[in-house]
Length: 97
Image (tube, rainbow, N blue to C red):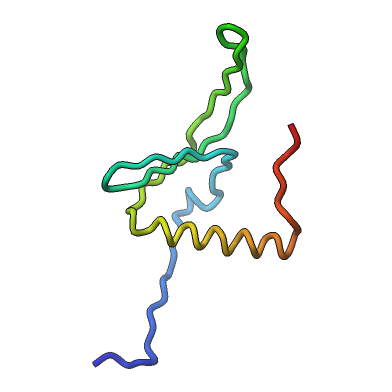
């Protein structure tokens, strides 16, 4: 029988080449029946497209594939951290157009 006071701690290790992270200013999310894919991207300079449209190229800097069972944990962690951020620094606002 396991000791009721015992617990598991995760020791997260980051390879040196990933320590700096990657900047992203947008994310795309899509899914299959087996996984969710998150494409973190950075926008590049815009250019004019056909018929006066604007094209915004986006370079993927990281792609994460996660199990569907992890989606709720991710949403919970983001919400808790966003709440903590806003408590410390104030409301997060989108830049004005």
